[in-house]
Image (tube, rainbow, N blue to C red):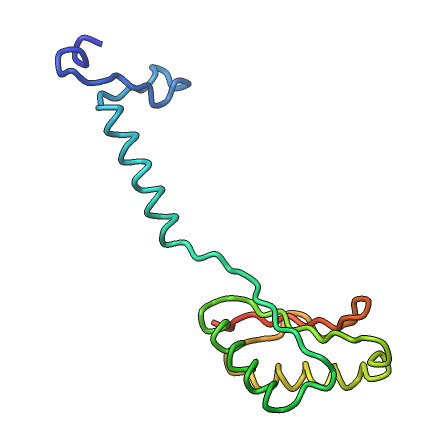
Length: 135
């Protein structure tokens, strides 16, 4: 305590359960500042993966599919997941296999930058497939 007071620093207990307890003489304010700075830097380098959704209809044309495929490629290359879904309305429910072929065609064209996390499956009136970026 006397040494800490002599240097105008703080006496911080590092390990209270040790015998004898371990203490350190440091500037506690500076220590907390540097700790927060390191945490902020770690958060800055961290990349959060978000899920981008692409919606289709069973009768989506080839040009529209290519256009959305380019967007999906950009999303995957930036490290995001892509959720591709086909919405069926009314009599479109008769063409579920057409929707599945559409999603598989999308997956085939993106297989160089992605892998299929979940295969196309029906959830109510929607068929959903999830693609993740491959490392």
